[in-house]
Amino acid sequence: MSVVAGVPQGYGSSPPPSYGTTSGPVVPILKDERQGPDQAGNYNFNFETGDGISRQEQGAPQGPAGAVAAQGGWSFTFPDGTPGELKFVADNEGYRPESPLLPTPHPLPAHAVAQIEFARQQEGAGPRPTYGTPIKPGYN
Figure 1: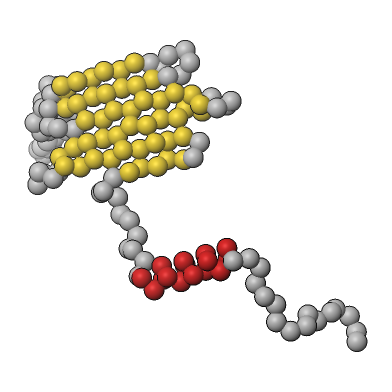
Figure 2 (figure 1 turned 120 degrees about the horizontal axis):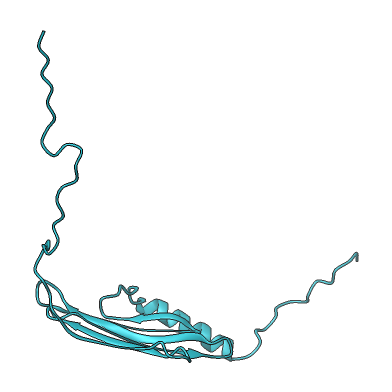
């Protein structure tokens, strides 16, 4: 009787490490400036990469609770060459991003704008008139 046993090569062992290899092109860091946070909680940073990405942010504690308010933004270039930019403020009023890239609601049609304006004028004109005699509660 003969018995043959085999094990595939590499079975049960990990592949060798691949240190130093990348999955894509290496993008250099052109600027990397960082400060803080300091004792008071203030900080800022600014970096820029060789492919046109930049990111900056500044923050500082605000108000009696010391919550950090920050502002900053990103800029980059889409593959088709179109520039992209986003700025933001984050404070006691919430996070408020600004960018032409963000979706916005469709503009209201002219008749809706006119109705809203008419309602505002009516509100500002004082109390609305009442018609007829008000009904008193109870039995008559």
